[in-house]
Length: 219
Ligand code: SAH
Image 1 (cartoon, protein in one colour):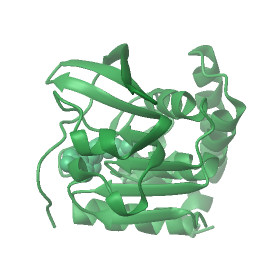
Image 2 (cartoon, helix red, strand yellow; image 1 turned 45 degrees about the horizontal axis):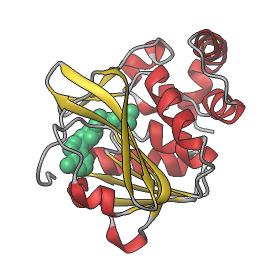
Image 3 (cartoon, protein in one colour; image 1 turned 180 degrees about the vertical axis):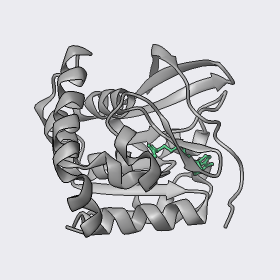
């Protein structure tokens, strides 16, 4: 891989192992998730100035007032979605592309939508650099989903909104799972919705702290 990876190589594999041990202590048990997080270098998804902090359990800035999600959040959301053995996933809020890469390592088909074009371009480059070819990117307002490839076995939304957008519920397959932070400001919960043959079942899993889901697109 690139020179950039060689520079921080040794340090990064050691600190990445520490991140893995921490995730296990935090209760992550799915080997597919742990393997993906062992395999995907999180430091290439943040600016070089922040690379040494990439394996800490914290969100970090990625520009445009957005953040790369905390490793535990990425692991937990992926683990919850994988429990129903999905073949396809729609992600809203590509951001840095780190969650996208973890999904692409564990699920056959990944569709990801980002409203900020520059973030999307960088995420696309990083995912390509890792040789992951099962990801389709779209620059759009993800609140309308991506109807062309629906229904999805899993939907992951990485930004919070008071209501779950109706289009996303419509694009969820029967027995599919949607995970999304709901609420406003600091009053957020991580919600899980399961689509059944006769409706939707929603439960709140934990408190959450995500950036807001925003209307419209930006260059
Ligand atoms: N999982 C990403 C999270 C990035 S933060 C990561 O770890 O890097 C959430 C992202 O959602 C931001 O990039 C933001 O621009 C995007 N976003 C917010 N509202 C959106 C919308 N309506 N449609 C698509 N993306 C949106």
